[in-house]
Image (cartoon, rainbow, N blue to C red):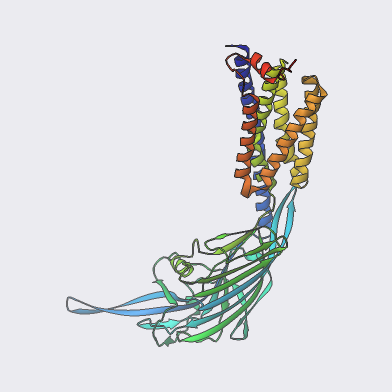
Length: 474
């Protein structure tokens, strides 16, 4: 193996050593991000967690008594069977408007986006008459809501049903309100679409059913008969990072407005033509029960409901950007070591492996400085300071290694261009692939042009000849 080949093997080994350092820096970034997530969780536990609002759903508890007559061995036996259950009626129309007021809470070095939302809800519920056979006793109907974290209720919600102010309380179990049942049986009618029955045997264990945690008792309402309710509600809800709304009606119109400039719309449904600017966002959803399975999911148990949600993202997440930057670290090392190798061969200026290693660690320390600075200042400023510190140190050191201030400044200029290009890749996430591909193509093209006349079998002598200027005519 000639001298150039041996030096190439040594450089590859040194690159692996520096990459191990990059992996360690990456683990530090992951650890710090985990600390941040724990801080966000701590804020949510003290403030209020991500919120999901479901409702209103009208619930009519009932008790059904059936008598079965059996004839065994010419003996007549009458058996009484009791069912406790509830009828659910979903709104025919529902309009929800939310105005999200975002802010930030701190936990040590870390911050989390929190919000308060003024929710205005209007809906119409058409309750059909019941058709439960047998002797039926109805309990007091009520409107049921579910909110993920009731600690987020700010003030007292105002609920009006047919223009009458009603009181919202905690609770709302849909199967087991036997103590509220009237002793007088009611007549049965017909059960139309929009009303669903959920029942269980009185002696059986409770079935898995939707468990709302807020209720509005409809005092004096008719029981088991066809009726209509117009519902209005205003509520202020606080939460952390994410707000979800469930489309429980046959026809749903939902609107959200906020001054937060970086929303993430997710869930089962995306808004129609959302308007997102630096001043905030406006989003509208228009859904029917034909498109959303929320009603069937509530009947089946109320888990994993179809909903639309918006998350208040941090516009620039330093941990994700630092992690992405670390992935470009191998590019820094390859280009810098490759430049050293070509320079060493072309100028016949030996560079010791220790010097390669020190420069490699200087490149790796940049990413550690980046994540350290970004926890205390804006990411752009942190990137500028970290890159300026590393470029300045490497330029100073390379001026002595390469025995020329001009050569040191040349490598410093190359590093500056590289750091600037990588920052462009980080902030242009949508165009990162094409920009990165073009940058790698440009680097490869430059290397191929510089080494186009090299005979790699003969080593550095041809590199020196390739770098020498062409002879001038006499």
